[in-house]
Image (cartoon, rainbow, N blue to C red; front, side, top):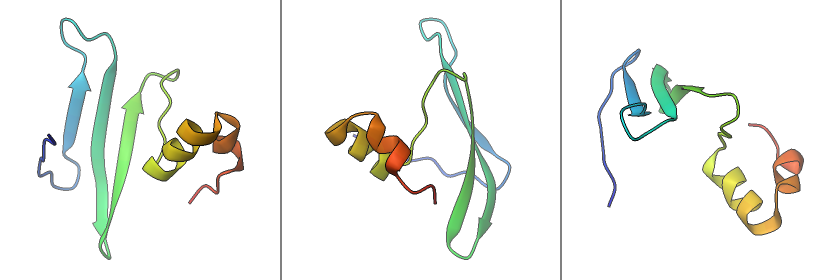
Length: 72
């Protein structure tokens, strides 16, 4: 199941940060241009944030795969 939310530029979604959830993730739409959405992630520094394709490589090949991944 996937939760689908609509957000406009400069609007955010917050994950966690309430009773029972110690970590907080805030995702903000920073801009929309040419069919691309620019997102900003505000999260504790010790929480890794990866693009899905990088996360898949890490899952398959271990943490060193993240370093070898291009950062686009």
